[in-house]
Length: 445
Image (cartoon, rainbow, N blue to C red):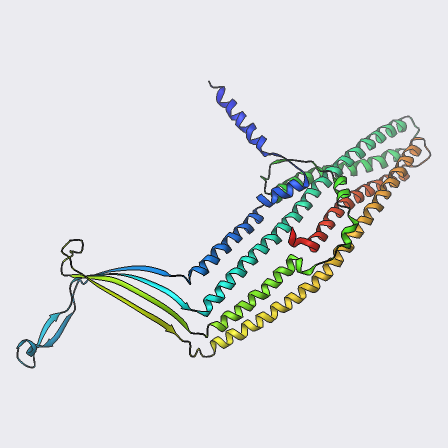
């Protein structure tokens, strides 16, 4: 029996570990993030909040019913003096009397209904605009989450590819160092040749160790971005080179830019509309308000607390009426508030114009960057092929004694640089395409 409990713990641990293992393509990672990323979740909750606030604003114009109750215990009742001659007493003297009872109970129900209130009408419009703002903010958040996932996913692939290349380079260098060391021991090579290769090997080993550490960070960053547990084990099914090819879409740069379809333009437009409503609200505060109300209740009195007894007498009362409020003079306070809102509206219009110009510049910049990344990818690919041939030739020449270790090291350094630039060019295609798509048609995402 004592062996069963540790076994159960082991099985449960294995189950938890299995649950943390996940496999994602890039599209699957994006879909997962839109459901689980905490920022995206909060943006969705903001929409729910806006819906509740919309109803909250609407409900203020619907019938409002309130019930109130009051109990009074006059611990020491107030004494009043009245002329004694009223009761046949001596003129000029006064009698002490107490009006009312020691215990009083009042229960009242009131129904109120707005008939006219300019601020209420504007408030309903504002609630709809606020909901629209929340929905557009959610779209903007989803786009930012998608962009972050693509960047994090690409960084993991880049790190994995880099580690694979560095390990391959390390194996070749170790073999070169070993062979050159043997040649030196036999007196057929200089010690400097061994040292040059050892310097190169040390640099590659250092880069490899750093890349291994960066890989762990990259995976954790991806987990945080998609909303998975930070220690979850991920398997990425997409390949960096395949994604670069898939994201090579030259025709994308020919697509027409529709300003109205851009989420940043939508947000700036709604902000202008919001400022217009705020101005309208300030103006509406100078209009009269009219409410109707009806109430009814019961009053109970007694010198003893008998309100729960059947013989207690209750006196009913009711009332119906209108309440009119006409603003007359506010010491120019409303005028100042209205002028302030006019200035805020002008600022919002300026911001909208600025957004239009920024987007025009942004689309040109995004197209230029994407075009450049496509060109760089092809250039880096050819450069890598050339660097591989040059390094291979110099390695053969060095082995045959026709080239120096310095020439070999220079060719190897050139190859390693070309490898890094090629990997980065693939990631640039993916990221720059994402940037261009976000500007072109992000409101449809």
